[in-house]
Length: 118
Image (tube, rainbow, N blue to C red; front, side):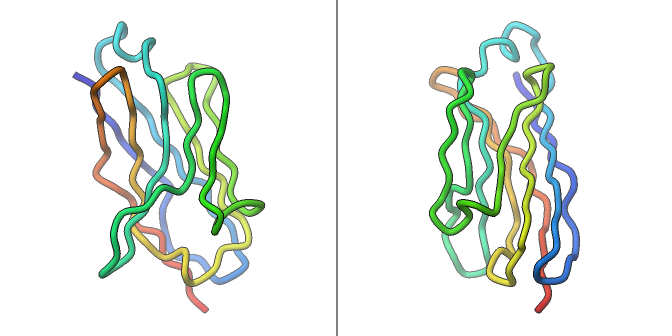
């Protein structure tokens, strides 16, 4: 099994920055064979949507709404992923979830709240 834990959410004014962290723990074998790590978000009354993902090879993909403002990166230990969020807007307010993909299996964290005030 793989456990996923996010941290770093909070309240920030529009134009500010936050950095989210996600750490995967559990079976070393499973950790080392992670394929994709990513961030998703869900605003009240809306469906969960992709924010950014990064593969084990370092390829990244971003939602159009965050391109140029958010940066996803993986830690050197390969079991962590970060989301640097700059120039935050009120519409970025949501619960942000970390997702780990290993083969056919998905693992989700509990989410961390990000609130951007205008």
